[in-house]
Length: 129
Image (cartoon, rainbow, N blue to C red; front, side):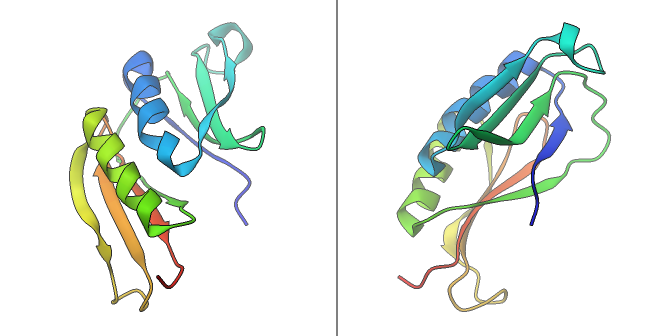
């Protein structure tokens, strides 16, 4: 089980705004924000999560060399759809519309967007619906 993930972004305010809007349909919100004076990189960081625990972190230190892929579990297919819409409205780019991906397994329902730095962010629901 992964406890948390964090990665750098090139424009902290822009990415913070993007993730605030894009992750809301998945029940994620900013749980903790740390100023640059309290981080090793001397850059601000925001931790998003559910239930008071931040598990998805962005940091303003830049240094984007290679995009990464992050998949966030969604409880319903409708929340996957809502994530995709919200992420596009927040300035993300479509990287795979909501739908079944049976090559993974019969109930793999996901949507993919590229965030402002080109990171591939996925919302996935494994429930049969």
